[in-house]
Length: 261
Image (cartoon, rainbow, N blue to C red; front, side):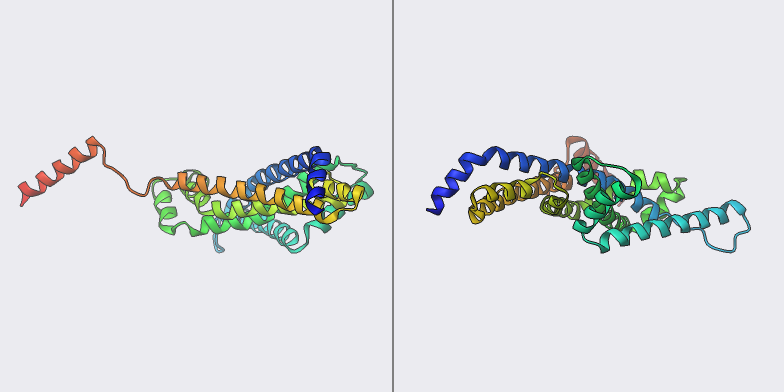
């Protein structure tokens, strides 16, 4: 009997499942990308060296004060959005913007905005950890050849940090796919919202939500496999083969060493 209902629900409501899954992917992908950009910017700013006290230069003093103020604001943003549930943030932002400022946001736009700023808070700490994990000697070497902090980040640090944070970024993406379900509280028609509507039509909650479980698993499993593939591609081959020029150079070096001996 249950199998019959599975088939019937899939046959009758598959467009709603597909539409809900599509909205879920749009929100999670867009929110993760925008949140990643926010986190990247905050991570770079928060790892900018703050000039020490004792300098008589007014510009350096102003820079130190400015960086401390900016860091304070960014830390407050991070702590607030990491310390409160996304479902509460959705209610406050969506209904609060209409009540306090008269801004009636489109529900899909509101969902992307909420996921983006929530993800940005988490990604900021992930990026900061990735930057800190890069050896300090590379900072010193870059500064020794005349690079400023921005140039050091772009050319030396971030390429390594991005590889280091890729697993955590993938994990954040998977979390966003699942956490979009909380956005049903502001009537975003993502997968969970569509499943509630389907189950409410025939009162077959078990069958409808089990189908949704499978869809969520397929999405998260696929994303995980794709990210693992990207990680392997970024790591490069495990063994390297010297090309002809490199072999010739190695032979020349061996011959030179034999002559010196």
